Image 1 (cartoon, rainbow, N blue to C red):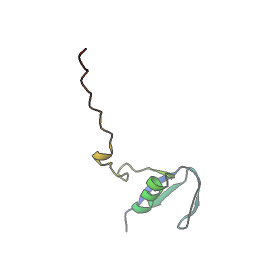
Image 2: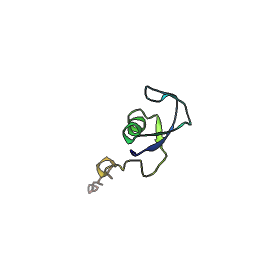
Image 3: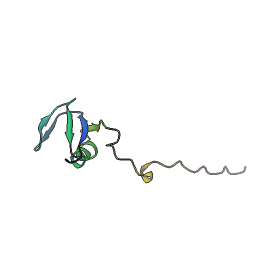
Length: 72
């Protein structure tokens, strides 16, 4: 059986695959569709901590380098 991921729907979402989903619905689906709902549509949140893909280090904001103050 293929891997399943759980997401919690944040609003009303109409899908061809699952029909209309409403706020609070828990959907168990494949990782690709879950990623689509969470990242592309921003219509769901991951429920499984292991299902949420880790963000690459490049995506995290870097601290700005401080410039030395000029002497007066």
